Length: 618
Ligand code: M6R
Image 1 (spheres, rainbow, N blue to C red):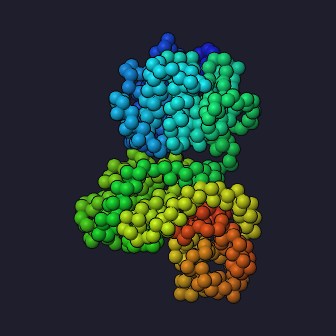
Image 2: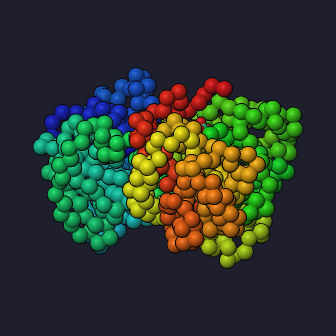
Image 3: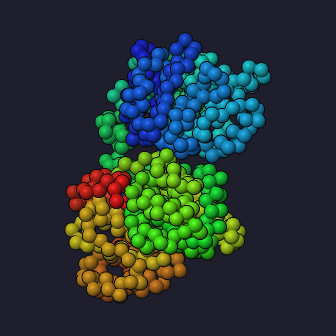
């Protein structure tokens, strides 16, 4: 996730305005920043790695000349946070003639890059975005020499032709010295809005970018091309060039509300962002997935280290790897790693470190212990450019964008999605699962984003009323069997950390070995019950709890009448989800439950007491 912004002004200079707008978009990404402005058919570009204030202090982002410009605040996906990878990106020409800013992921950039390099283009960065600049450059060149039957002409046609080649998600904007009075933008899946003022036109990823300047907004839809000029804006459909007439809408948000896109809290916004983030995990670079799979395949022993929510993702992954690829992995809480494995880890060990931030001190300390004993380090993180990426032999960036709420939500489901993709690949490589099973898993993993979207849409009200009903309880149990034990642990962590509700999670089979002694009439027990092989035994565990008067809430498959009749309350999850993928949708109602319980109990879900988003001390 990144933030893009641009403007065409009738008076004044664009640069300071772009700088201020990027500051308001900084919550979308903050590892690099850049601006490009146009004056007298000349392009002026400043960009660097670092937070906006730090870059501004060194480079002064305000002194670029001209009334037209584009800007970008980056959350690295392809290529580390370095100046060369910061946006705007340009083509081959020197001085640059094209500047492109982009939010999204271009899935087919490697093929396009190869094709363009074969045509003589030279790439400078590791970004997918640079491909767009070269495509536009190539199209401009072609259109000068070859007659075109395009509906568009000139620069517009070059941008339309470029985005036509892209597979993936993008909100992209380009400027060009050849037609210095225009900004051309296009959208597919990544957000893009226009701001309309009397003396200016803006485009941005989100409304807060221009909210202090105008509250007149035009929403750009997927598959649309926008041309901004001093005369106004023109929207056309990319598919046939037909004009779209859309009148601006007035929004009455405060800047803070706008940052949260109208959601009262970042946590709720991030829960709602999960479908999009999950889609992005399906666009990860093939070569890194393949490389990681190869390392896992060759490993003598695999130890997964992580803390908190990331540890729960590892625990779920240990079931995935075992079931799909017959690989035994050991999930270990990072702060225990040195004590537990410090002496045994060795050159034959492979460590898969999972950390949203990539900066968690306990995880990095575990990695350091393993590194000193010559183990191979693999990483999965949301923080491209983080310490974890630097100490890993190979890493995958999960591409969830910044998560601001202290409670991990979208980053957890994205970790699960990446880990399940690795387990499926490994199963395939090792010949441990049938083609039929692989096809089904591939099909289902594609459906998961829509399923999560449906759960959020249809179950939120019910979850909210459950939170009302149980707000004054003193303790909760979260129970599951098999892979759902990890889901139960995650549901319990969410409730504890943001609603300050003492909660216990354990494998349902453990009840009789101790914890059931806590149960008395009305004691709330949440069961995670996907219809997997553990379902029958789990029903026995539900009955044990019911017999002691527990108030049972079941998260179960829709139409599972037997469980629905046993439970006092239930949340329904779409049918037909394979067991190994079940933690992704089944955790969503538990995230929502924790969120609503926090509100019911007067707690701030975004900033729970005593906690920090990134724990950088041991
Ligand atoms: O950045 P990391 O994934 O390494 O962070 C690990 C934990 O600190 C983190 O998951 C924490 O438990 C969250 N607050 C959970 O919501």
